[in-house]
Length: 175
Image (cartoon, rainbow, N blue to C red; front, side):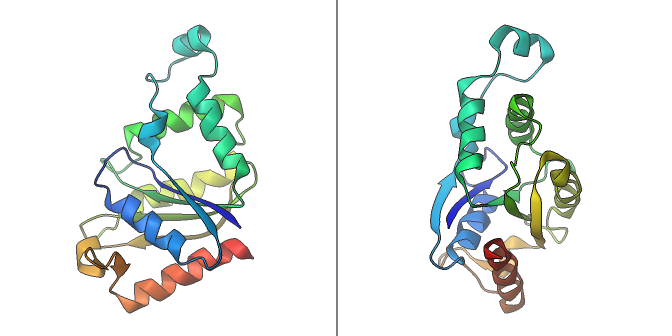
């Protein structure tokens, strides 16, 4: 299985990138590629820019990466209750290539934050909207209080219940 994982944020020290990377490592036998959306930074989307630029090569490359994967794990950071501007911009450009951004791929959607909410607001939005963009959402999971539940030194979940829930979620990608 070719598995693509990334954090929906441009924060270089993202706890969501740590969560996505860890989650991908739980899928036995998977060939894992971890993307950094900083590699796909483009001008702020607008119809005027689209008329000027067409479909930027970076958006096309991102769309191709999604299409090449057998499964996708995305972990969402939450900015003011919504998507990060970096992810939303990348998604907007990519959706103009083809509204079926996720191309029928199985997805596991995650989110975490330092607080007890676990970025659940953005995760709920992502889980609700992803099927409209041709995602086969297999599972979603919010991890609250990241630093209490994740061992940063070991790079692993210390909360056994969350580890079990995460393992069950990502293993649904193989179904």
